[in-house]
Length: 439
Image (cartoon, rainbow, N blue to C red):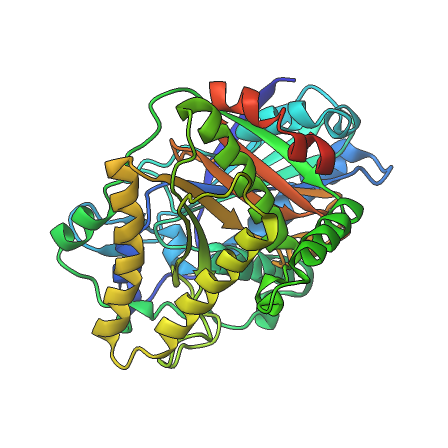
């Protein structure tokens, strides 16, 4: 399939941003975040009408409602400042592209590898800090009349909570009008004031992968996850700590993939290496500082679980689940005790520092997970129904990572796995991957 861009324009806010809001300081956590787009793609099947006309109307409706919502989410129409930790809210506009795809959605849905490969072309994915708008949208029209809407927000000012808060606001504005949208808050810099650049940059230096990264999707359906949870709980049933071995569907999938990656490392190095698993956690509602409702920006840190090899011949899945539970519990416990903004900042940065150090020294295998499960991805109704499928697009991050998304029924998990090519060949042949997932 080929994707051809047929138009490109900037959508500006429907009303100008007031002068006192035109310079938005970003938080110290935002400073740490990378200058990359985080794309999400929403697929909508054709409704059987004259789709050429209808799709043109849908595109225009999206552009009009985007202009209206940008009056509230004004930083997304601005530009990142070159030398200061701020967003210049200058109303230059968010980019809106229209594209034609020479294929049908049925072809795409019948070939998950094609879907994974095509995702990199259905949403803007290259972010240039000096020129790009924080928000970029691509409206893709298929020959069958179906559409795919690729929405990309830069991670510099948006975590997953912010992404879906914005998308929910936009869809509400598209259906009911912007008057029905609650006002967002962009005040996180008052809690995490920006710091001297060198203090942040030295912390976040992370070694990128040196070889080609390939991305594949592995689907763990609800039945497979139920079996996986049963096996995990059964193997832990004899332990006096069995309660801490109880795993949610997300945790058992993370544990399974973590164990597969540990086996892969053992095969490559000839011995089992210590490893570290990290997953982002949303700090909203977990810290003592009062956070305004609908706070936008990055308010995340890492929960970290560690494994050090011992005399065991095989790593037990329930033991990894226990480590994951402990890592998340410890993270939230530490953040809940922070009595000052400075203490909270150093706790967050310490999590980043430990991971960065492990990546740089390369004495510990570091496995980076991202989780978008339980976010309302399938509620994105712009006025023509909810999406048939939602996927995470390919981001610019030049390193290995695993991103988890809900399946449409809410019971399964789609794992978007990005590994160096030679590692992927081994990973997809792992017996647990073959037993519990489809690719």
